[in-house]
Image (cartoon, rainbow, N blue to C red; front, top):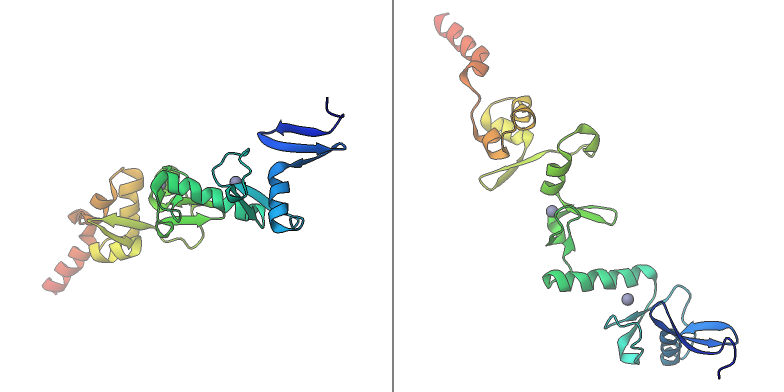
Length: 194
Ligand SMILES: [Zn+2]
Ligand SMILES: [Zn+2]
């Protein structure tokens, strides 16, 4: 029979050695033996095969910090999900993608298009100085640039999408209706008759 507070138990899935009432994870003891010294403070021992009871030295990686350990798991999840450790998950559509295609806000990432679809274009959700991007026929331009191409006002494009529910392509490719351009036509007529 073992003495009180001494021996080996399994706690939270880890093998833990108790000695005189002090409990230490076996993975920590194995890592410290391999290092030849105590683990630096803040260090975390990661199990490569995700089995917390496989404490073979080759299965252990000493991470200098919690953040580093977290990154290992993020990269492992990315590999499992899409095969590329560098890709990250869009919070909204849950698909993995090249980080270059994602908007980063702290630790959160999302596709611009997913965000726009979810939040709409309410001003309070729009980052300051943000330029609205609209895509049609594979071309992405700011709303100002589409305005110049189409020869209409920004408010017309906004109205078509936000109020009339047009899709982006239709909104930026449909020329303004003739009656909306009347002031310009009237001026031209006046010029001709003058
Ligand atoms: Zn881990
Ligand atoms: Zn997305």
